[in-house]
Amino acid sequence: MGETRHTRVLIIGSGPAGYTAAVYCARAMLEPILVQGLQPGGQLTITTEVENWPGDTHVQGPDLMIRMEKHARAVGAEIITDYINSLDLSARPFSAQSDSGTVYTADTVILATGAQAKWLGLPSEEKFKGFGVSACATCDGFFYRGKEIVVIGGGNTAVEEALFLTSFASKVTVIHRRDSFRAEKIMQDRLFKNPKVQVIWNHTVNEVLGDEIPLGVTAVRTQNVLTGKITDIPCAGLFVAIGHSPASALVKDQLKLHNGGYVKVEAGSTRTSIPGVFAAGDLTDHIYRQAVTSAGMGCMAALDAEKFLAGHTNHPTLQR
Image (tube, rainbow, N blue to C red; front, side, top):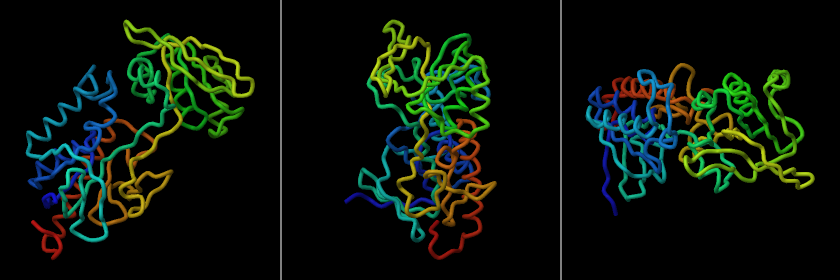
């Protein structure tokens, strides 16, 4: 059996929210332990170019996350490469079982496990991720100024991303597997009225085509779901907008969730439905999903945890 370790603040997840929470908790002398999870650094580690992080006109996503990790370590946070398999929030101190066998008990927990974009699951899609295939128009749209791009999806996310991308691209082709959108009617009207947008109904994307040197997308191969006809559509980029999946499996039967599995927090805070448990970043955010907003919520979670601990210093189940 592994060892049991106690901490005043256990941070689960290591994206901008988790690392920022670690910085603030460490500076408050709370000696936090951060468990990184399966993808240390989160989604930014698969984002090659970041141009909307304040203070950096240009930075590589993985480099930014390395800097955040170094910052958290420098101020005293303990960062552990491990994965939390299960979390018991039924009583304080809370208990987390890790993949390594170590059990972490904690007076407070900050959840920063993020959300993952849903992908098509194509080998060629995986090959070109970060090199013409993206799931974030706000992050990457700037790189497609004056170019033709494709968006796949039919909900609010797809329509919003397509409209946003018209600010940069010369043409935006929206591909949807059905003959109508699920998006709100007012958003559909805006899309249909935009002269840069073309909609292709009843089609799926079967393959992403591109160059090897330099690696980059040149077209997508589509198939008509009614006739089976194959058509290649030239483009410089493919934006997959078929939704996101919040990483809330650890707490799905313990905390209040909403909007398809996002952890619900009190308005203006990071407090969840269980006192002493806080959530930050994309795990709670189905609207913005930006690194900078996640970092801001990480700060909030740390301050909320500090305030909670200060108000429960003499609580019999809280250990120092």
